[in-house]
Image (cartoon, rainbow, N blue to C red; front, side, top):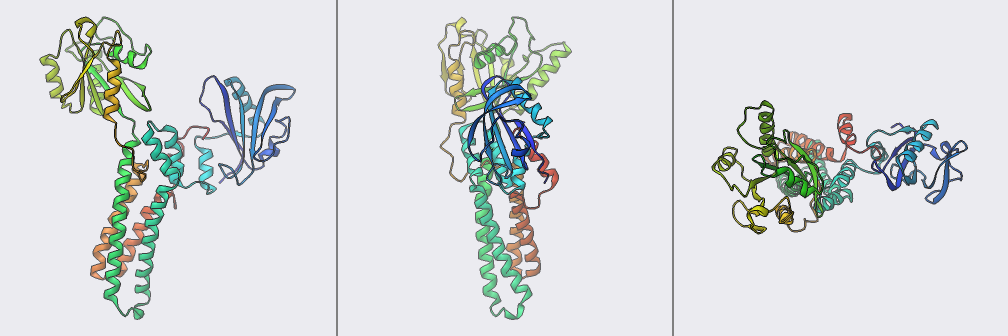
Length: 445
């Protein structure tokens, strides 16, 4: 692992009160001494000037973490400066001239992994913690980061190794085996026990995977039903163009919407209608594609017109199953904002005046309202689930081989099961896997 000095801005772009720059590598305290007006001390926040020659760039707080007691396991410095991008970029340029190169995405966490500060599951949990879209996902990511998932994996791997050692002893020292039937019975019982633990972990992982996906909604409806106004009201900004002319929206545009402690994706789509315009036709095809790929659909209806046979036919033809009917423009019909129970539910709103729009958020929250997650739910990834299922498959083969007394084959199936499950925590990872994981991080992490 190359431990040349690296640096990166660790805070998001834009103007803020504070900005943070991270630096990591070998002997960076000496390398960066010309930059600071005072000498840094281990794990002590010091107010110092950063100067480029005689020119003051900023007055900052700097904290030095001597190896190995740092996030990366290397000498690390955090610079807390004013959150002006000009200041941040000026400091980065100064560091570059001092021989500190700009970090690659996820390189700090990658170094933490190689220096045994984090295992691969915890490294992935760092990224998931940053991108968690709701409190349940946040809690699940913390479960992984705190080592609960690792504990379960290690426990299963230890159990498999115990069984392997007994099987290997039978193979290598058959003359010492006076009670083979008792050995087979014990091994079979132990394999079944591990399979039970593994099945429980797979169930938890499957739940964790669903939390790792941000909920998505597509807003569908005829032209001028008020889709763009509806989106703009939810977002509290003029994100989508609103006019009285049909076909204003020609493409599907996705926005982030925060509903209390949850972030969802919501997509504005082209109006559904019969048209000879080739661009509008393509927009409508994209609307249907957005609807089919979304978790939920908000079907918007002009309440002055009502739900028409064409609307019903469109919903039926496209097999919409999880959708909400929203009757817009109650300011014109003088209807009251309300939620009407049924399958599907109906919500009455005015995107223009905002009446009833709070009910939309209530419906969205209800869709994802559930009891607090179990302490054993982890924010798992498809990679984890695949390895667990592979390990389960080899163990199922092992169970059959125990009864047959085929210990040589049994030993190989147990070895393959152990390899599959231990791959989750990064034992013998491929470079492609590491690249895929760490390049998904932001630059400063």
